[in-house]
View 1 (cartoon, rainbow, N blue to C red):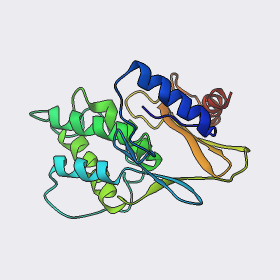
View 2: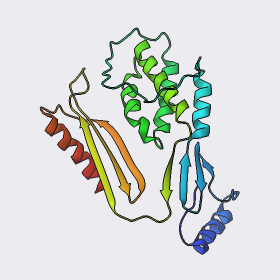
View 3: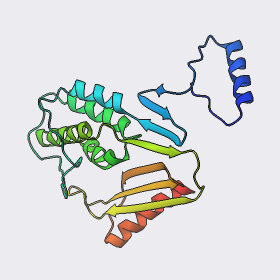
Length: 216
């Protein structure tokens, strides 16, 4: 359990009440929680997943030490029929599931993880090769982390984008957005649109609608 706030006396009161009802141990300032590392400095907080990525790479057992600059190749459009079906899809599903949780704090892999997660029911050798590319990208960017400054404005800055008809199987577009509160990235998402957009303008408008709902 994480207890946070700006009133130290009330935090102490809450912890005391919890101790009266439950057997609990105070682990002190937040440093590690569910695979998320937190580092506090005078300037703000850093959120890192370095240990989680190290464990993920160890489970993946990659046979090389290669790294890549991007998590997915430009203009790649994967289809369910690409490649040969995997004999045992369990490994693919396990690694994609781990990447979905990692994307909670690594927005740079949100898009490729969204794409790869669409094939967990019947992954192929081609899908698996693209999954390995994401892992090699993470190996080269393992020290990247999110920063949340202590002093920042409370102004929202929002960005949205869309890839028109990017899915070759159903011609639906993808929406993506990110939201900053001052200098802090607080929300991001990649999601396939629910309907086919007849133009890139409509795809962009649907992305803006998704973003507006999030901000509201």
